[in-house]
Length: 483
Image 1: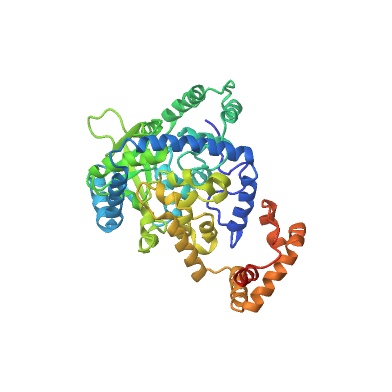
Image 2 (image 1 turned 45 degrees about the vertical axis):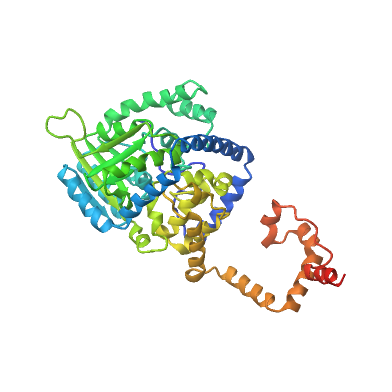
């Protein structure tokens, strides 16, 4: 079995590593500067996402009324999130009646403890895991490996990232930044395969390696796209079939999901599953859509002997209590907002330093991990609104980024920013002083461009300012009116 790597290799910032006051922001600025300067990699990402937009637009055009479908998906999530107090107990009762066991976790530490206890009780030696961003959120792999359990990612993109010692770059396309020749070299190094640039051959190399691991694993861990309260079923959507094997072959199946994944009816999937596929990957439906209804029953020939679900809060109820931004819990993790975000395309997924990257990650991370340390993510946006326009469940993402900026200014102000704003207000309130500052600015601008003082150094390093005008706007206006 491949030796797992719990710590990122070439990536300097493990996901969600707070590191102390101001560290996350300094790391973000450093990594953003490095990533923005990597023009070949930026070009690779832009070309990949340009293909996504063409495919997505073609699929959207096949809907009779795509905007009406967005309304229906948004309404289904709104109804669920606003009735969690009714739907979660209803789901638990139905899931338990199906033979499953629900475990409630208040935070990441409790969720890790629950999973570790289940793995220990199963007498497991090996664990296989399909894509599960909630497990990334609680740093489950590192916890399992620290206890001596070998964990292997079964999703191809996640497997590649595990071999590279990196967290996912994008929560739908984990290795979208990796070229085929790099994957081939990685497989040659770790799996002993022959070099190839053929995607199908690369997939088959990973597939041959995985087949044995499914059989050897004692515990399979998956995420959940939706939890159906009506039937107590877990809905998992995927393109590779690896989640089916992960859930079905090991003796014990453990699913991990946030509490916001619950929906009321099976009928809601009729709109949510196509919208998830269309917005996420430009497909009419993902290749495999499965509903899991408990462990193997008497007379059934396959399936796990035990099935557990860990329901994670981890400060989601605090976001639920925020009526202004509650709709951020509607997110179905399609990744559409990342795919259209000009900031994500230039700084990349690692720069955010969080499990959930891009615009939606910048909205929810300050709620999940603290506004004081993560409010800088709200500034990582041009506020162009492309994220809100792309969201299949109509989350008002770019306005929520503005809300976070406002809340940060009120509750966790940056002392330097506050000082700067006060200086500006003082100067702007005195016309003679404002005019004097403008004159000094015009006179010293050429010198500042040459010397690049510390506060302007990074900004000027990538910008070519035009020469300062000889006269101020007000002076020119007076001259024009006089003429």
